[in-house]
Image 1 (cartoon, helix red, strand yellow):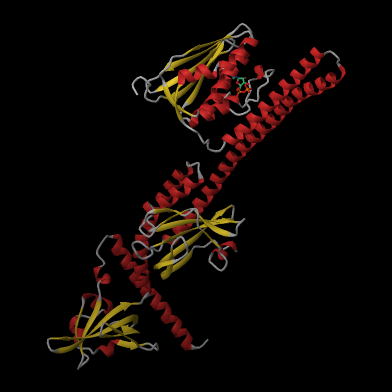
Image 2 (cartoon, helix red, strand yellow):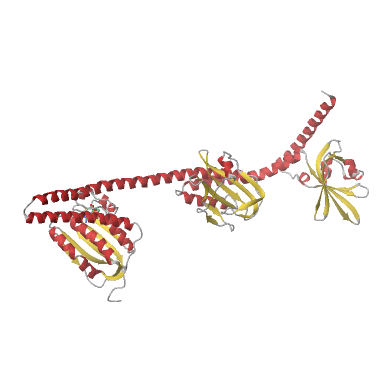
Length: 558
Ligand code: ADP
């Protein structure tokens, strides 16, 4: 090993030791909470341009080189400078000339301190004075700057992490996916301090990124659920290929709106949202509103937020899926019950028709023939009614087109109840109407007749012979109630609110031939009239159904 090499190693070691000693001094200063002003202040030498002698220096400059001002005044600047190989760079800034270069300055003890020099020429009291601003490039100085910067942003980061944790807990309580996204954006800008945030989710079926919520150019939250764009050739491909680091575009990167149009320039961070390591979307933030510079912890903060939202997305989606699945199962269950019941209900009349038509061919007696024909007719009518109800309810799933007229409800009941007297009499049931004229409602006569007809029909149907059905009017402050009371079989308490569900039939009433659609149809019709139906019942004693409709100004006062 050559002596030169040994010597340069030794120099390096000495330099490190010096840096170490000075660094220790700095830390001691900081620990004692003392000002480190001499290190934080500017290092400036003032040099006479003509003689190149140093005429003045700041305290920091004296501190850095270890000279007194008197000693410095005996020196020329070039006696301190030891130029590096690197070429000088000259910038011209606001017509004032500046030289910027790197070199080393000699300490009083002889060792060299690497510095960056910014040299400016000024005229002061008629004399040309050159300012030499020095920026220390030593390790200790860089460490010191970095420590300061980190301590500051480290504290801010710590605060933001706390906030992030609180936000995540809050978002976790939200059931709906859309609401979670909306609040995620809102809290991201309000509490984490990003100017704008947007959430984009991968839609595999359409091969696009689909929008959810974002922030507009004025800083307001914007619904971006209708937006989508193809991601070929964008940074999304990196995420799809497994990159999980934030993609950071610094100042002067284009900033986009929800339609991917450039609206300005600034910084932009994009982080992937993952579910079990799978890319499901990304979160983007930019500084479009306030244009503040990016804080060094912001990419990491957004990355962590992206992880939280990705995780919560997975949970909310799973919850939603379970919910959808439950609804779907219920629908399948209903459909099964429907097919079973309808099958059963159609089979009975069809077999009656089948047997009657067979017998009709073989009997000779006219009276018997007539009776069989009547049976067939009845069964056909029943099947028809079933089909009508089924079609009716399908039709009513969409909006009802009501043909509204002003109607005296008492008079209307008197007319519409007529056919039911025949049905009631056939079952030896007393059907009473207690009504009075003059109470007005706004209704579609056909639909209202259908709704009330179904309830009156039920009352007669679910009441034993010798029972009684009573239809009456009840006045409410702004409404009128049409009560249908029977003393029939009644409905058990636990089944009462189920009777309005499509296809629902109380078990005990199974032998009766209904479609299970009557009350659901009635309810749809009444609600379309801005009314409601209530039901009360005592099992074994009877039921009261009340159709409540908004009242119009009464006839007498109108
Ligand atoms: P259905 O065509 O089977 O009568 P509805 O929807 O009209 O269908 O009624 C649903 C169920 O509610 C009926 O199957 C019956 O069990 C019960 N129900 C309806 N009205 C009455 C009533 N007045 N008394 C007793 N049970 C009733």
